[in-house]
Image (tube, rainbow, N blue to C red; front, side, top):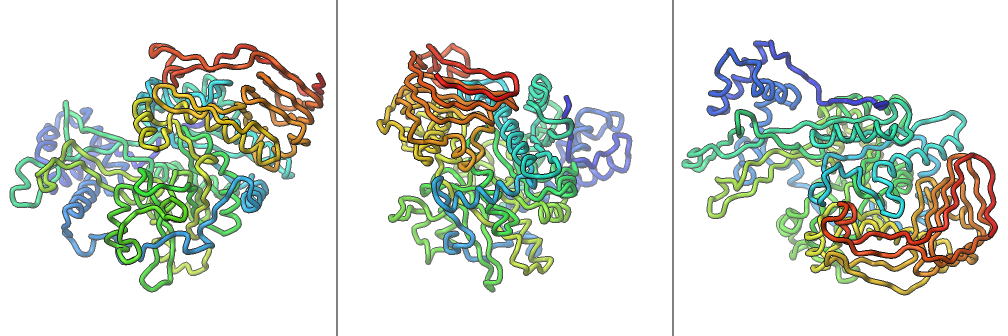
Length: 640
């Protein structure tokens, strides 16, 4: 493929290096890993698959096998309420005071789509387009959705069947084209995709098949994350109340699982990408998840907010219901009051955390504010932005590693001395701010710049991932929780485009239409609107596409699809379906267009139909669509 591939985490050992073997054996002996030692004991098998696996892990992981077991043992002891070593134990933030992040107006801003703040931040983002780069975290398959391929191959919506990966790439290329129109010298907006063993080859093949969807040689890079060993309690070791951990072996190999999306920071460090981007003049890196297309609506305002506030890191957040299964953003203030920052606290910890660490302010833990109906702690959606001028040195100091967590599931009545199944250390990309703040304190950085901030948006603007299967989504919907599945993600795309048109002053039908597919209620209110990448990069650019909002009329049953960066509308009367596709360089003016046809309708599908349709329970049947396609650059007028 044309994009480079990095197999990151480096630090490779040579299989013939006796010193490496001896180091590993010594570490395993000190941690009483008898089962593994017995399998590695045969010196004649030092080139075995198990030896290669152990040496590879020992080579890339910070501190090697000994470091991994040490961290797992320390975190396990903390879970049991023990502290083994005063120097190395405990939470370094334990004496920092948690509070509502909105207590500081400078840190927390709420951006409504049609608000002056949104417009201001978007404009600031537009002015700094050439300074950003992007990373997509894409280590997962779509098996849970009933889809056997990579999730990036799934369609964002089924009117155009544009995949998530193509949509992301095309959006960045449209941003790049706009930046180049503003700047005197051409720039590229680079993209890195973090893959896993499960997704790497399929992602590479998909990109090769489609020639990187238009990205240039070296502009798109794959970085593949590693796996870490699972651990379990050594049988009989808990008899004295101090259980020990062992690396789990099955069928002659270590049982390995993904380390978590925090590996993205390790990969950007060890591959040299972050440092390269900084050297090329880039200032901000955006991290996005694989199947949350709406996050692109927040890219420009998030960039603008980082520029405006000189933030070193920023969270994209949404209003969050108390005890919702999403991390909450909490403000932390040091005992001296000298330092204040924002950290993510995971949902399964937040309620008890508040009851114990902030019991005066939050005696009932994580509860909804009666004035807003939401928790005071906004939801983290893992759409994050980091400033490269601090990101690179911070990762250099930590060797790219972020704090880890250990979250085994315990057997009942076992006093936390037995796991239901083997567990592993994990890391989360949203925990990077802990490294950033620690680095600033250690380096006595009192400039006030490079802090941690957040911007809050309505979830309908930036968050509607496709991640749950139909059964799970149905259960969530019954409990008034967003289903976050294929059908809801698709219709949220239609809905946000209607919202964007309304914000411009376009009058659209107000009636709502709910339908249920696979026991999942879906807002099928129309019209259904799809804007291809480049057409509506911002509200400012969209306003230039609809010069007379009062002359745009779409009925509720209508479908409007626009693909092309330079299409403008003066007048449109639509009762049915129309699709306008314009290639780069084709300038299309819709002076006047009136269309009435059969349009698009919903059609139920059986469970054994195409997986993309089956996960929705319906297909959008295009009965009659008036299509205008312009495949040659030039100036065109539609007047009919």
